[in-house]
Image 1 (cartoon, rainbow, N blue to C red):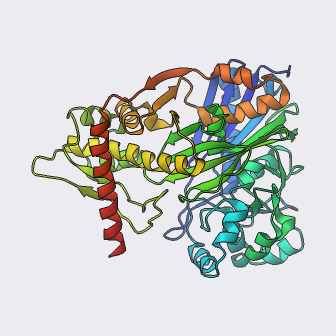
Image 2: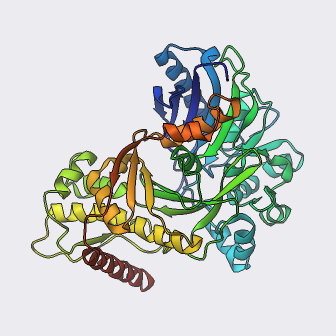
Image 3: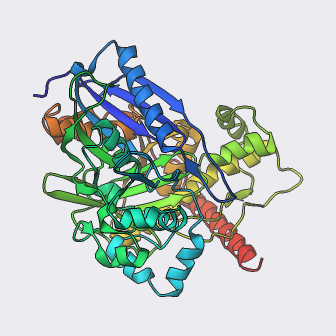
Length: 500
């Protein structure tokens, strides 16, 4: 069994860096969090300062250890989970970034992606990577840096530059520049990685003009990558787990068998289904991705992204001013028995999976003189569940599986009204765990398995505990009527977008 009483999880997100300390029972014993700057140089551009990402992540790690009254010798291993696709390019000789990190939300390479699609490259990309041609992913961001930063391409061709997603950047710093690695889950989000051969793809590298010398070594998600060499820890600590945030949440929810699904209700919603040991191509506009690699086994997943989840509640608060705090939405929505025919399609940033209509916009249908703020609030909450239904049905069609249970996490998963409506729509149980820090837990579990802190998967599965199970209460006819109303509203929103 591993020495040290705790696993330290780094949860490096889009708006903040967090550190959580887990004990052998899987309980969080200390946590620390610090936000960092969001940089918007131009409309549609989003950047982070990589140095600030490292400094905040190192700072919260030290803070969490201080809170718990423990030192580096008490840490059995470090697990890392991170915002995916966000791209850092740095100089190997100095360790300094050549440009800010380009964040996954950034759309500056959209025109280049249009060119790739016009050249008929979408099938090549999809068949090798499981992804759509989109500026969301890392590959076109690397190309932009090489083409737009003075001297960058020459330095890259000479082998002086390194590319990494945020996990790679953190490991580089943790090891004093000794390790340049990533795991299969993060590599699979770059648009450069062949998910069938589990290797960087030379044809895609040539297509995007990315020198192979820039790329990190791809390893499994659960192994001892190396040891820390930083003043942050007085003794070397194994770095033993890495996974992108949504894959880590899938693992933290213990969705280990094909057909098991989790949905994270955050600003947006990310639904991920374990599809087992073979990649499942999507014919319903979902992404195929690597879930994780443990030992010699690789698990794959289908993923659907919903752009506006909890953000619709923020809109009620900040845009309409009908609630003062996000937590007030449940009380307002439950003050009426139903939405009274009101349907909200919250396409404020277009429609995501499975529709992929970027020009769609938020639309409210069915309002009358009798419509109140409570009806709008209820329709807003219901819209999150309707969108989740659309993605889950697409997943079931792709995988040829019926989903009987949806495991949920994220801030909006605490809303009982939303979770009950979700169960009513799906006709499947919606299951909320006691530990909702599933993303950090996934990183901790992967690290702990690698060093024997937890002996096996069975031990981890016993730690997953139910907080509440929601089952369908509405009649099937009422559900069908509600779903038809939603589908009608989505069709109308699409027509409005297409004719605009």
